[in-house]
Image: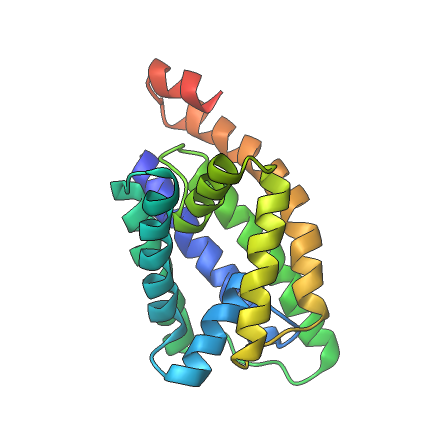
Amino acid sequence: MRYIMFILGLFVGALGCVLTIRAHLGVAPWDTFHIGLQKTFGLTIGIWSQIVGVIVILSSYAVAKIKPSFPMFLNMVCFGTFLDLILWSNVIPEPQTLTVRLLMFLLGVIIMAIGIGMYLSPRLGAGPRDSFMLAMNERLGWSIQKVRLIIEITVLIAGAALGGPVSIGTVLIALLTGPMIQRTIPFWETVMKKQYGMPEAVKRQVS
C-alpha cells in the first residue's frame, strides 16, 4: 500500500504539473528548465525530467555519497512517464481566456501539492532533486531553505536562457506550494496510518 500511495501521488503531482503547463502562466523552476531543454534539443518534457533526474542522482552521490535507492529511481521514471502520457493524451485542453487560464493554474498548484503530499507520506525516500538539495546542504553546511533557493534560481535562469516559460505563476508556485505541502503531508500520513494498517515500525517512522 505504501508503494501504491507513492505511485498514485506521483501521478497526481504530474497531473497538477500539466495543468500549470497548459495554463501558460508560468511553471515551477525545474519545469522551466525541462521545457527549455525540450525546446532547444527536442525529446519530451518527461524524458528530459528523467535525464536530469539521473544527472542529479549521480551528482548527489558525488557530492555527499548519497546512495541511489529504488524509490528514487521509481520517482524519476514514473513522474516523467506520467507527465508525457498526460500531455500526449491531450485530455487537458489549452484554455482560451485569462480567467480560465488562471483557474486552471490555481487548480494545478493545488493538485500538485496534494500529489507531493501523497508520494511523500509513505516515507519511501526523497526524489532525485530533494536528495541533491540534501547533498548540497551536507557539503556546504547551508540551510535547506538557502540551498533550495540557490538551486531553484540557478535552474530557473538556465531554463529561461533555453527558452523555458517564466511568468508570475513561477513566483506563485514558489510561494504557495510550500505551505500547501505542509498541510497535505500530515493529512496523507494520517490516511496511511488509519486506513491501510501500516506496521508499527512504519507508523513510528511516519510520525
